[in-house]
Length: 70
Image (cartoon, rainbow, N blue to C red; front, side):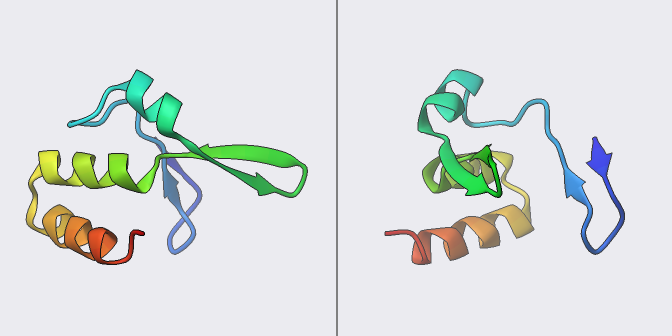
């Protein structure tokens, strides 16, 4: 599902490869945005997802994320 228009469009995914919903939910990162607390996929889970997807850009993204993750 897409919300908005480029360059500020966001994609909402209902499923992803490499990780389960339960894993992502328990590892989510909560970020306060104004008065809301918004959950985001953790860097580790996103890296696992990108590697499982295996597309060339996803693999580049995974390498970049790993280089910048503590």
